[in-house]
Amino acid sequence: MGVTTARGTARRPLSATAKPHELTWRAKLRRDWPLLVMNLPMLLLVLAFWWIPALGNVIAFQDYNPYTDGIAGSPIIGFTNFALLFQDPQFLRAIANTLSITAFQLVFYFPVPIMLALLLNSIVSAKLRAFVQGVVYMPFFFSWVLVIAIFQQMFGGAGLLAQILRERGHEGVDWMTNSDTFILLITSQTVWKDAGWGAIIFLAALSTIDPNLYEAAAVDGARRWRRMWHITLPGLRPVIVLLLILRLGDALNVGFEQFMLQRSAVGSQASEVFDTFVYWSGMRTGDLGYGAAAGLFKGLVGLLLIVAANRVAQAFGERGVYSRS
Image 1 (cartoon, helix red, strand yellow):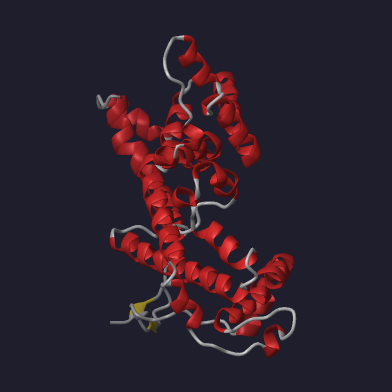
Image 2: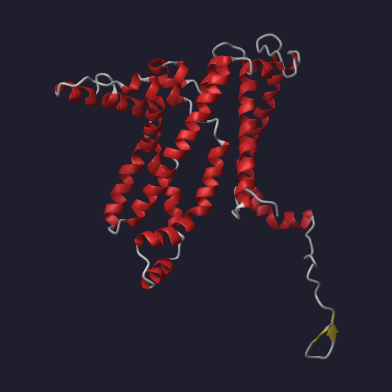
């Protein structure tokens, strides 16, 4: 049926499946050119330092010699470098160490910023909250050299803890050179250095939750734990899922400087991770094609993990990192 207006003329009904008029690219350009101009410096930066250098990944498929042949003259050898990677026991050990460290930190580090944000958010006094935030944020600005030096003074063979134990008649401990507890050591270093900074994102998410929800729940008799379980955590869930997806996509990237500085103390058997393998196998030996193959493999695995984790998140009703329009 048509729709009759006040003047008595009938209009055709709007179809439920009718699409709005799509703008041409010229109309979109006239509409959005200020935004494009604002983004131009960043696009140029990405082009110069990310996209153009990414073309250099072609050396992963070459017998690359930078001094005589260069990229243009080096012969193509196909997937030979990748085949050699999976025959290298050092590479397999680096993958195993990296994945085990990532899994361990997902369990024992990833929840720490969330809990820290909840604790900071529960502090009533604004001055006390600001002071505590400043204290827990500060280690993020320390370099890894300073962080490891502090841990050495605390937990090394001549550190504070070992001296206290010896003064009381016990045997001293040296956790800085113990390969069996290395995964605990690096996780504790990461928690101390990065947890405070990581809590900022969750504090920002907590500030978007409507305070009226807490007041209504309190009126209905919900205690603090009930309010946190039914209001706070659901409000944080989209951010938690987003950061978890990004962390899974970064699973093969557990850091370079932290492990490189402690490699000589615990040995490569425990400290060899993907980034240090790329450095030692590519940069130090001069086999840049082999190192590029390892780096390209790392990037492809990270991309697949992000896509897979994003689909799982969308299957559970979350938005994820991206979605099709």
